[in-house]
Length: 63
Image 1 (cartoon, rainbow, N blue to C red):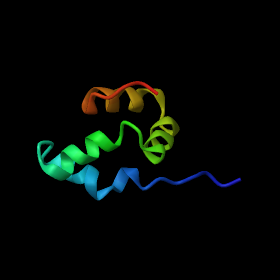
Image 2: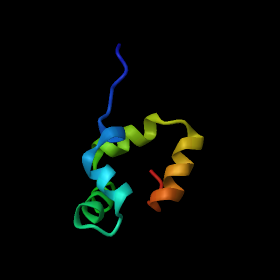
Image 3: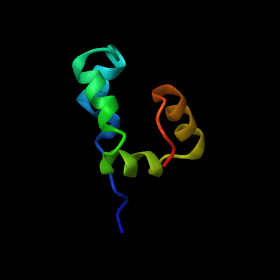
Image 4: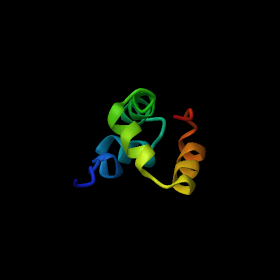
């Protein structure tokens, strides 16, 4: 079975957040990751160290 790929690593909204977290698109992306099933799948596919780094960087809840 092929491993699932996620577009989250190259998401344009995520890039907007990285560039300016207080922008409208940046804030929308940050709000969106709280319930997005795609982000949850992407996040849980990462290793534990990368997950923790993202939790710290984006300050979001644990899945």
